Length: 332
Image 1: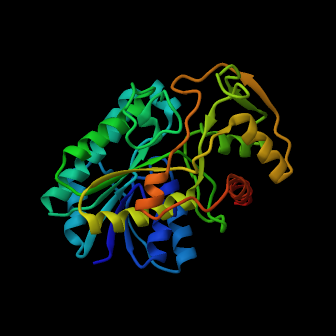
Image 2 (image 1 turned 120 degrees about the vertical axis):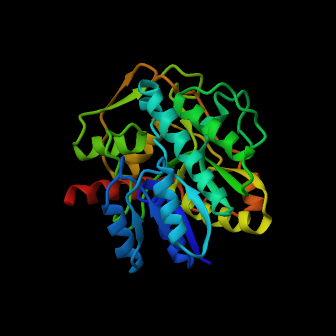
C-alpha cells in the first residue's frame, strides 16, 4: 500500500514532489497530458532515483481513462492533484480555458476516487485564494476576498468542491515557488512563455530576453514594486509528503499555508539575484499587470506546528538553483 496518484506529476512542482515520494518509499503513478511540460522531467526522475517511473499520458478531465488506470493499480493510498493551468496573466486572457481545465480535472478525479473507494487527496492550491488581503501576514482563517483573476477563482472553487466531497483532504496554499533540484535534471519545463518573475530574470541573465519589465513601481509597498513570499520548490515538495501522512492518519479536511513567512519585493529579488549569481539584469518599469495585488506573505504557524514542516532553504539558495537550471537548459 504505497502507490500515490500524482496528476500533473511531470510538471514543475509535480516532478519535485514525485522525487520526494520515491525517496520516502512511495511509488508515484504519474498522470499528465504534457500540455505544459515534457517527458524530460520523467527521464530526469528516473536518472536521479534510478527507478522506473509509471507514467500515463492522459488528460485528467477524461474520467473514463482516469478510472481505467486507477482500476488497474492495487495499493493506492491517495492522490496528489497538481493538474491545472497556472498563469495568472494567461487566465485573464483566456478565462474559459482555466475554468474548464482546472475545475473539470478535479471534478473528474474526485468522482473516480469516490467510485473506487479511495480517500486522501492532497490539493495544490494557492495563496491567490485570499484575493487582496486587508491584513498581513495571511493565515488559514483569513476569509476569501474577491478573486483577482480567473486562475485564482478556479482555486477557490476547487477548494469548495473538495470541502463538499466525502474524501479526507489537505489543501496546500502555496505562496511563490522558485528554484530547482540541484541536479539540473528536473525543473520548470513550461511550454508557454515564462510569466513568473524568477524564470524571466534567468532568461534575461542568459540573453534569451533583452530585459525584464517590472510591472508596476507605484504600489503601496516599501519600494513601489510587488511583494511576494518566495519558497524553494524542494521545501514545497517535502510538505506534500508530510501532508499525505497527516491526511491518512487524521482522516479529516485540513488547509495549510506553505511559504517562508517573509515578503520580498521584485526590486529586492532582482538585486539579490544579481549579487548571488554575479549577473547584471537589465530592467525597466512597465504598467501594472492585471490580476496582480500589491503584497502578500504567509503566516505558517499552523503548518509548522501541525505538519512539523518549515522552509529550510533560503531565497538565495533558490536563486542559485534557478540560475543553474537555466544554464543546464542551454546546454541541451
